[in-house]
Length: 127
Ligand SMILES: [Zn+2]
Image 1 (cartoon, protein in one colour):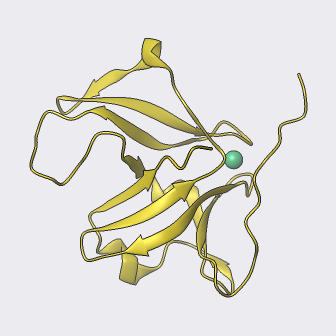
Image 2: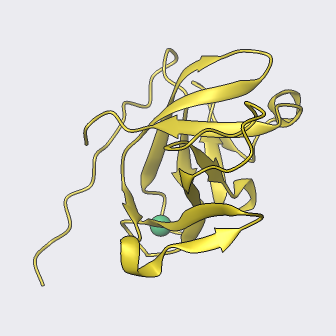
């Protein structure tokens, strides 16, 4: 098996992103926050294919894994039944316990002020 190439974000004061808690692969970069959700660009994640899709609370979802160590990092919504706007198809829900956060200064667990947001989404930016 070939060497896995991982995308690296810059550890600079103007960048904020999630890392895998287990192998420190860079997972998703912050694009913007509003009162409803956090919008991210994803990097080093693997998404299960259609043969492994499953139903979770009536929605079709796929597991999302770290490219670096294969840890389970969350789910991607493939098809959403409930159209209440809280969850959209193609969005992601990340398991924050399995992630660390670079806040532009230090690494730490996900900050409390952001935990009030009910959903973390990550769009596919073509990576
Ligand atoms: Zn990892």
